[in-house]
Amino acid sequence: NMVNYDNVGILVLNEKSSFPGFQNHVFALLNPTLAYRWKPDVEFMLQPSIRYAMNSMVENSNWVQQYPVLLGLNVAMRKRF
Image (tube, rainbow, N blue to C red; front, side, top):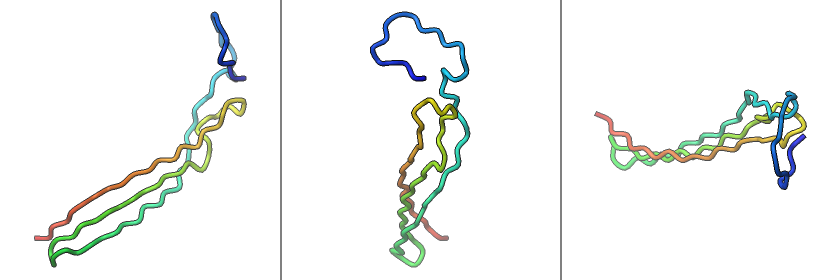
């Protein structure tokens, strides 16, 4: 079980269930690309992305379960030679 926020003193954790126990998680990824051709050989691109965890990263069921969500944005310019 989780510790209360107002506990004072020494806390001894000697059971496996006292720790969150991190585990591997599986992500779903959405990564569309928007491209704009400025000239025949120059292209600008925006690539927003969202990554959502399909399972919790915390193994122990007595702890608060966490499902990470990662957001990102890539900006690129491509020049063809």
